Image 1 (tube, helix red, strand yellow):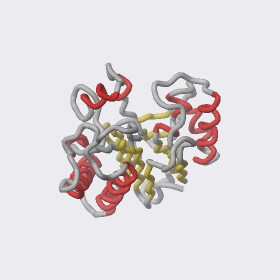
Image 2 (cartoon, one colour; image 1 turned 90 degrees about the vertical axis):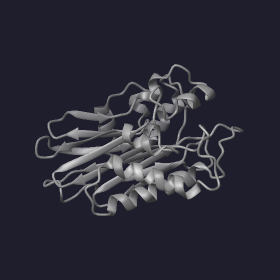
Image 3 (cartoon, one colour; image 1 turned 60 degrees about the vertical axis):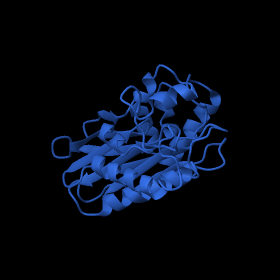
Image 4 (tube, helix red, strand yellow; image 1 turned 135 degrees about the horizontal axis):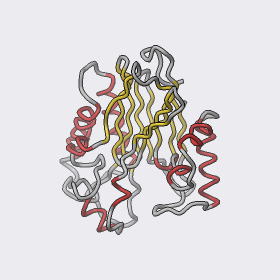
Length: 256
């Protein structure tokens, strides 16, 4: 099950979601700062659409490539698509977070780059969140400060104009045979604020998510509107949530 919703304060949804038989792609484009030059003639929805489609191509082409390698190639392909028209050296070029999930035999591969998340609900009742929290540890959150450390070892990594950013993603695998997984959630930060901003647990989020991704987004909007938690970022954001149930054997089904 998947659901995406535009922020109440946005004109366009800058998230991207695509679910296949054995993969999930969730992207969250970074909303541009009004008036800030970024050296690119394209908007953020163009970037996430181009990146998402190239990721889908990589994930549906039989190969032994890792998710990081597939992402690196997809970023390079998007760079090639607008290198002749845009300044790819501009530190404020359009960018996107990435969260990927792939069923690969009895293994479930995951990848998180920047602040979108993959969260596993294990069969024993435990929760395993896969998050990239480097954005939470910057020293300077001004526009200039973020631009100076974007896609650098001193800051954070995001899908934009440096394919090597994919090598810095939080990526790995869960063996279904060793650690049976009941379900997984793939979320943009706009759908994860009940945990990240409003002090609820991942277990709480999964209980809500079992009623459907749309209900999770509705509950998130209510909490954001009530302003029950403190946050560095904006109160409202585009929100995308995917819920996957795993049916043994793991190769039979990814998302219901």
